[in-house]
Image (cartoon, rainbow, N blue to C red):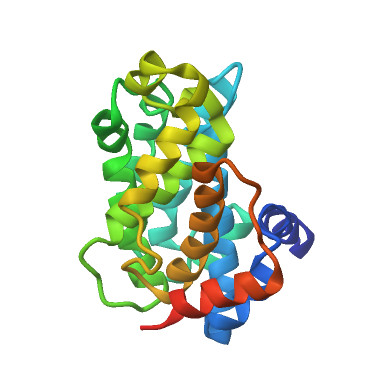
Amino acid sequence: MSSTALDSFLDKWRSRWPEWSVAEPFVAEPQRHVALAWFALLQEFDDMLNTGGDPLPADAKLAWWGEELRSWAAQRSRHPLGRVLEPVRAPWAQLAEALPDLVEARTVALDAAGAERGLGNYAEAVAAVEAVVFADTPRKGAGPAVLLQTLAQRLQDAGVAGIPRSLLDEDAGNAAQRWAQQLLKGWGTRVPGPRARRVWSSLARARLAAQAAGKPIEATPVRTLLRVWWAARG
């Protein structure tokens, strides 16, 4: 596929995360292009997890991606993102094995523990790949950090479907804000994992904090700069 096809995926991610233009300099220059491709891939998985309406197209895409990721071990990528990511000898098969969990995780979880269990294996697989992609030492807590960010993204993208049933039954009117508050409790301003993840996590956490407070996010360049500076520290 052409470079235009690759750019379309990268640009789609950038359009959803305009703050990255401020944050990107905190990622080592050789890793920036890989980080963009990796985050764009994760956004594709988020979209398949949080799809609305007929799930069959998303299910078919997930099945295709499972085959694609397994083929990367033999350096036979077909997707434009694979041209960037495939050369990295990461545990792609482990991630492929976790993708079917996204289908089951679309169902509204009964409670917070159920929501975490549903995406736990996927989050650990993502963290395992990231440790290799960014040449980082595997860190305790990296998987749970990915899990929180995935659940926060699900809340933003899927709305009611991303909120545990127990919170909806208590008070559906402010269930989204209370779920955001609950997710925020376990989310530090600096999370375990490679620097690229820590920087991206700081942007996602700021969005979730605004939702938890019931206020619009203040993503000014100065505020963003301070957030990512702190997150990028070792």
